[in-house]
Amino acid sequence: MRASLDRRRFLQNAFAVPLLAPAWRPAPSRSYIAELTSLMRAAPVPGAVIGALHDHKLAWIVPLGARAAGSPEPVTASSLFQAASLTKQITAFAAFTLRSQGKLDFDRPLVAYVDDLPNPRPARHRPPRPEPFIRLSQLAIR
Image 1 (tube, rainbow, N blue to C red):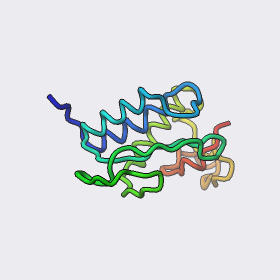
Image 2: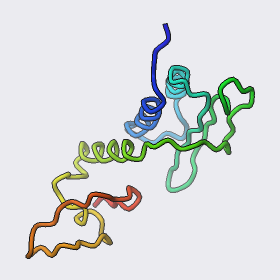
Image 3: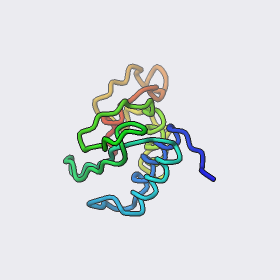
Image 4: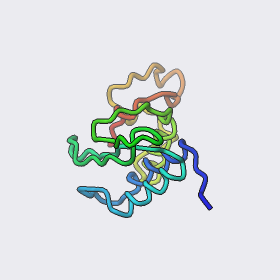
C-alpha cells in the first residue's frame, strides 16, 4: 500500500526537518535523503533540489529525481522549479521554532526585535501593536 501525501505537506516536511537539526552538518545525512526520496514518491513529486547555506555561502546542493514526471532527464543543481506558495507556512514554522527556543515572544511588538522598523504609534498615545507583516530576512534576534 502506498502512502498518500500532497505536495504542500511534502514541502512542509522537507523544509521542517533541517530546521530541527541541532547542529550544522556539511552535507545532508543519508537517512534525510532517503526520507526525502520516500516523501517525493508518496507526494508524488518527480524532482527537487535541496541545498544549505553556511556562513552566508552555499555549502552543499543535492539534486534529486527527474525534471518532470515520466521524464528521463534528471534534475541538476541548476534546475529551476515553480515555487509553491509556502511562505506563510515556513515563516510560521520559523517563528514558532524561535519562540520555543526563547528567542521570540509573540506578545512583544516587532520593533523590539528589528532596529530599523519604524514604530508609527508613539508610546504615549497607546501601546504599540505587533506589525502584521515582516520579512523574515529582516528579523534580527537579539
